[in-house]
Image (cartoon, rainbow over the protein chains, first blue to last red):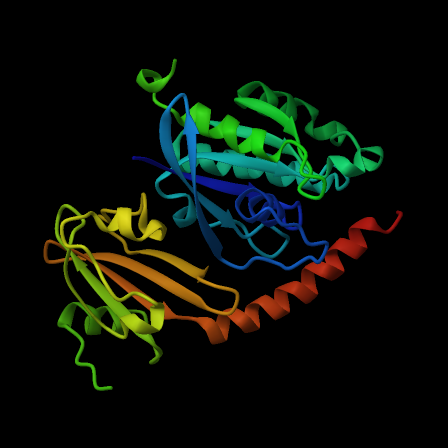
Length: 173
Length: 130
């Protein structure tokens, strides 16, 4: 069976762990519990009659005290780059993590994820100084999606999108 | 339980100044098949390996990490359940790949408590109007 490592990357508290919990265990909790290091989950998806084992690496979020270490990215096939648009600072983290991936592994398929769409009225646009970089990020992404782990919006679709992007061309219909 | 570490492990543990905690090890061949394993595997809830199957198929956490050439790969604070953390060390030694599982629950738990407090404050500060 195909096995692909997918990392959840983003600033702290953007909802990376909640997205994985919703997808893997169908649960959501309002309580914020920080991730240190990594939590690894496995889920088997079927795409175009091909089974794929997705290894989901829920990596600790970037914050003012720590950046993601390249070792956690080793062997990664693709990633979900998660932003919380209610917090403008999370755009900058997404840009720096994308740069880290490119520097460490070269370009890899990724989905740009705008999480917490249940709070869409509180969303802000990216800071003006980041608009050019965000434009490039959107252009490079396989897709940009809106999700909410809380309301279970777009979660299944997001993981299906990254899995599809990782499916070898010969396995695609 | 008395454990006499193979030289590959004792030398490595010395090099990282590791102070005793629960540990287990796997020695892998060039195809990532287990050729030797030992120490406290049951602590890590690992009791059986199929020698004919790649370790990456049996231990998802190792997927994509092997083989290691050059500097050791360290994946610190891997959460294995709601209460336990391990540090994963992978390195090459005399033609084999060695995987060490070191219990880091004590330091990981403390780190999580400190980080939780710090980041909860950061979130509150971010949401304060300028």
